[in-house]
Length: 226
Image 1 (tube, rainbow, N blue to C red):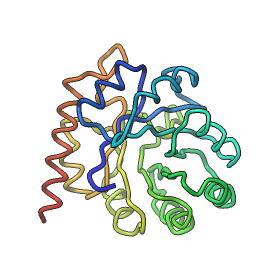
Image 2 (cartoon, one colour; image 1 turned 180 degrees about the vertical axis):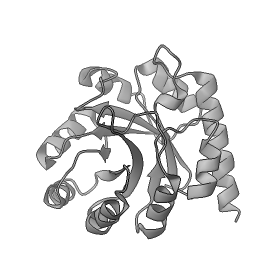
Image 3 (tube, helix red, strand yellow; image 1 turned 90 degrees about the horizontal axis):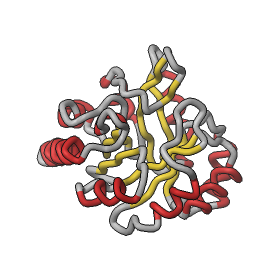
């Protein structure tokens, strides 16, 4: 997962193809969301995901917190990676891994004001049952946990990278102007962006995506040379 670049909120086949051609590794598909509107239907996503082939991968991003429901949706979409943003229990997470051992699980660590110790406990408790973590930003105005377009205290993400036995991806308000600096300060395994590469119409902008990928790769190359 070293130097991973993920872009979430894929709308259609055209956008997926553009992201792949721009050098994006993981393409994220958010479903079953408590706050945000979904970008396409699950049936439409099935068709889009069919065109994504190695080394590129599709990722289900969801707030589901029941093992059977998570696995059912992954099976429907034909994805082998799931990013869990809900407050899933250790028991359900363990059950998910038990029932679907080949499913790669990325668990969110949503940074809010003064919750570092809670996140530290989450890393300690859930690390045995996940393959990676992803940090993101809590928006107290909307209650959204992720896809807020807002940054958080990067020193928290840096501490989480240091203590986590699993790779940590960073997200939250990233774009081509700040992603390299974020990589250099936090030293994550990967980066994720959603709204930071979108035009006003909500579609991904090729120029913004290309700049984000270029800046990310420069950042990762620099920390790997240290």
